[in-house]
Length: 187
Image (cartoon, rainbow, N blue to C red; front, side, top):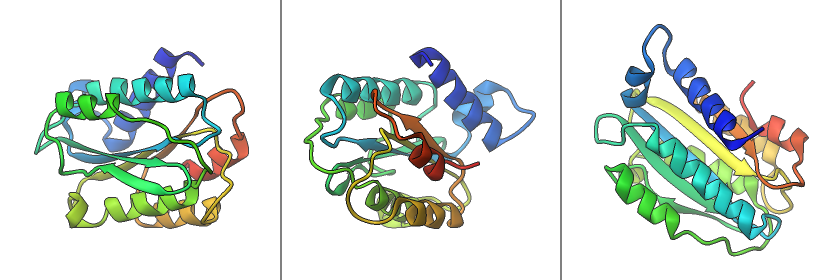
């Protein structure tokens, strides 16, 4: 699937999930906490990491980033999961895009389970900027080849049980584990 069609699919999924019977413009500014989980492990080739960053940036450009609309957080994971952007850290797309452009992948193992757990914390803990009564959305960009840490299936179920929906899994690179991506994603 080419990048444009994938971005369009994500936008439609997000918009369709948030509300029905509204315009795309209304979906762009509907309050939501959106957290990206970006795989920066050794199994992600540098050019694929760059494509994943571009994908994240393109999605951010599609939404109104402001104190009353969409808030964006970002977790990069490899052997460890780290919050690089808290939900309350930036109030403009330009600031977010600058931070994302500077991100590097460091290699190491793929600890997707810990990233999913951390996303659950970020989306429910006010210290990370989580808001009450807004949509909670996670987009995971990975090859689906976890090899360290918490069981991915258990972590994904825990995240979904916290009311996070949708959870969207996007395959990155040429060696994708589709079964794990399906395990991560909402139905």
